[in-house]
Image (cartoon, rainbow, N blue to C red):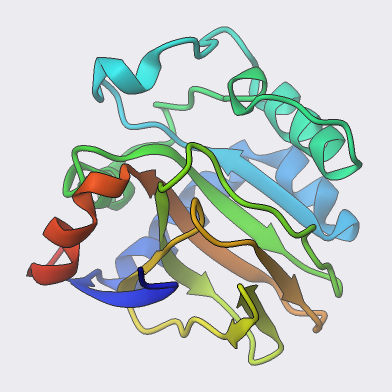
Length: 201
């Protein structure tokens, strides 16, 4: 089983960065939490698979989503369905184009690491799932450790596939510059399909 691999999917990084620039004014709490080192915002594409919607709470606010994720970081265990944020209003333009290219995708978000933050070591659930990453902004001092293998994902427009539901891993940013990734999770049985395909989005 791979730890991480570059898929054949490549996105237009300029369009993705413009989408992020356009939606940031809707996310004041995201900016307020910059000093805490870790922040994220949930982004769902409308009308995605009903199996992915099971037990998720569509009534939760964006503010609650970000704050309750911070509680998880502080050591209180919570089910991911406790802090899911439905944000179809953010899944517009080019972001929606990207996520629609992966119809099995679920649990998508933008994750920011800043100010010398290191994420706790963990394994994602469900077991065997993997996470797709597109780097929006990064720094040479930001990276991952997955089962002892350390690496940095470049901002090159490629979609990277990480076996986060199989291996213990952590991520860090040792610099003062922001590290921003658009991520979404995928079922384990779709790994081969997306590893082999090549496509510009």
